[in-house]
Length: 145
Picture 1 (tube, rainbow, N blue to C red):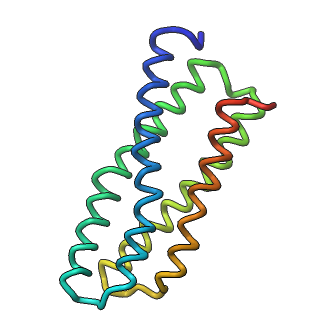
Picture 2: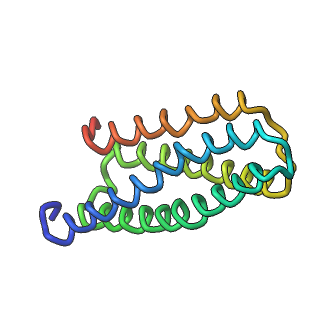
């Protein structure tokens, strides 16, 4: 039953985890913009490496795991698996996960002083999580199908 205490607690934890994850998805590429603008090996570059690692490994990764776990629990508890909107949401969540994996790869490249892209590239890349977030929220809130 979607209004049970368990369901509401799962929803609250899911929202907290997704907010934390999305904060990172919006901030990490912004760090890449700044990081790409400083010389490799500089003190600023080394600071960005620490910031990027702590954000991704310390906040985003645990939040993603919790978000997946609570999201699947919500789908089971609410009996949503037959709903078309959830299948579309899964698609956009999968795409968000691909973008996250791409960001992790970029973080590792920066850590190895092997970045291949300009600050402008990362400004453009920063838009992908926003567009996916809009689609996911609209599907989850409006349940249009």
